[in-house]
Length: 452
Ligand SMILES: O=c1ccn([C@@H]2O[C@H](COP(=O)(O)OP(=O)(O)O[C@H]3O[C@H](CO)[C@@H](O)[C@H](O)[C@H]3O)[C@@H](O)[C@H]2O)c(=O)[nH]1
Image: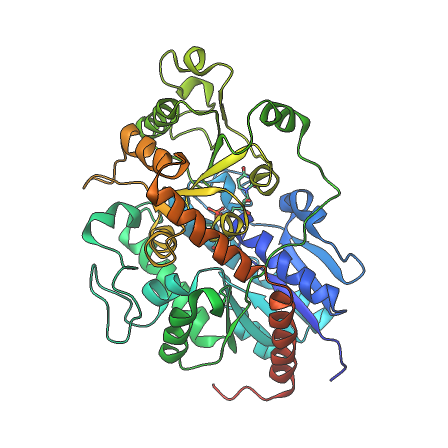
């Protein structure tokens, strides 16, 4: 083969997926490889600025067909509650003829995917190799994806941790991802088919951080597993933080502001959202909360607790739209990040200087949060009741435990966080992983696939 390859990327229609696929595309583009990046029409505007190598990375759009049950015009997961994932995934399945046309015309060497479980068949038909890119921590793959999985509270033989487990009390986190058991089963089948049929599994994990989990996953799958290492984006210096936030944050002392965001998909129940606001108020600290309006409301304003705005006026803002999270996390005034621990946010929190408080929403985020809090000891997880509810007091206590300068726990997580940040940002580590990955991809392209 030529020394440079051509990869097609077709990520799940969600910003938590499109963004990290683009980070990988940039690493390949930086080394001179070509990438054709497929995404829904509406998503193009939101993501094209993340393409740092336009000479090497070219976008193509697909039209997302309508599926009964989805509101008209829906193209990405941010437009729907997470429980409707299966419907949008069915719409993605209907794009297969469009994808086949692109593959037929462009003849890529590799196709990267995650949700489109039929990609391995398409790839094989047109002589490409398929890479299932799992945007999950190795711990989440070990507990939720490997054959057999994990029972509540029980570590299977050889599983590397007695702490990073789901327990009966986490059952709340299993509910939001599907409307019914059939939907849940359909999603699981999708992942199993992807893993079984692809040529290689690529996991967005770093052996320095999750070594034992990486080893466990490698032992459990009967196929080649690659790890991306710290797939950190290059800082985008072309777009500064919006003035409204840099001005507002600039009015507070260094490290004093609590920033809270729950990713692109979380929609909270209204009472839990109000409790979150009240917990922020109880801390007495300045805060910026950027989350979607809760279920059943169309604006944040209509959902706020009684009298809240007047009481926190000048020190607290609750915002219902998108903010530039990485830039906010690197603002000197921000000292604490209250996060749902989606994988993108997990990495962004690790490379930031902020203290980390975790409020996971779905099972995979619970595993990430346990890994961060119990194994690495870089964060604290907010305590929940048996019902899954978290109180304003438990949120306040968790924030105080890391923000209080005299707190032993706060100092411990700060010290551990500093150590891990240095490890994952150490010079040469990321580039070494990228070079190894590229060699593995080249090997894959030249060798015959040896499974059916
Ligand atoms: O106002 C916002 C909200 C989010 N982000 C960014 O959006 C990304 C969010 O990604 P992530 O933290 O992974 O959360 P989700 O959007 O919730 O991601 C989905 O996809 C992830 C990757 O599979 C999973 O780990 C999560 O559980 C799943 O909810 C991050 O880069 C954030 O910086 C912003 O820039 N501004």
